[in-house]
Image (tube, rainbow, N blue to C red; front, top):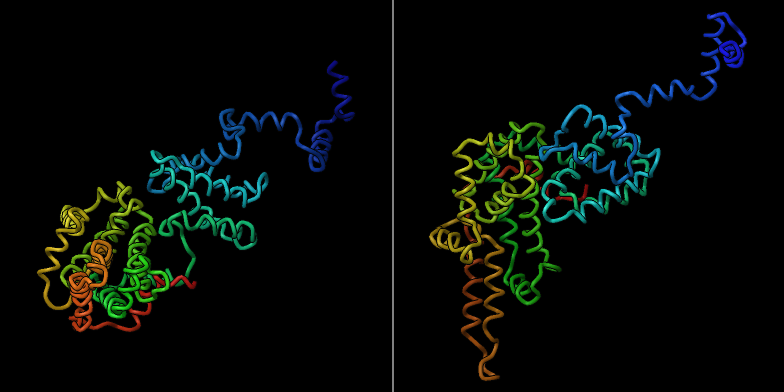
Length: 390
């Protein structure tokens, strides 16, 4: 029987010739059953990981990340890298991205904190390790455009040269200097808001078609996102803690300058869930830094209709920048609470006086002189976080 088997597989009995024939044959055909068997028995093809649906594979990849973006093991790192590189063999990248978008949108509330963070980390690796994929696939680019608004921009990397410039400026500017330049920009936007802009907002309840107020709101949001970006772009907890500390020093200078609007933006960025969940980073913060953050959150708390902020703001003299959102809310409340007319034809002068007093107080700040000067070149670069023109 052995002879028959030998004759069937290879008529040559010489070991060398048999080996040569075997090598030649395998160059032109599929692997032998023995090769397949050995491959199936290898550690990388353990039964628990031998097959998975696309949903299961994505979940396995996501579970490899912790909240800081680290993979749990070298095997987890390999699984993520393999999936990102090889998934196109079985599904289009557009489908893969669509799955991530659906998972992000449909993430259960009780799992949203870690779940969405893990999705952001997976997207980050995909974009950084395989950037060429996104340039060559227009359908993928379209899907990623749908995904981008949901994945916090601060958590997704960007190859933008502008953002690298902003990072460079951040690294080389002192906290006091940065606070002064941000205050210059904030004050400039604030001074462009006229009484007609305030009236438009009160009547419409929106900044739409109100460029001056819209710019001010965009800057506030942009600064908050920039704070998050600068922290999340660092690779280690120690580096993130250093950036966090620097922003606290920026916030302290903003408080001295009485620029409450930018102070609110910076504090909001530092308290954002994408930052507060970085436990390793939080553990490295000095006690005086965490205390300062606590004091700022207390000052800016919305409790009792921002009573702490209102008390401090009322005591400020000279140059100051108010929290615009709080005062806009006051104007809307006054407008809705008091009628325009009394006894049908009589104008409610009390309402006009209240509105006038509030708006006039805001406009009076325009005549204040900032206690600092600004470098125009640095100002140009600091406007980049609000510039989405690419």
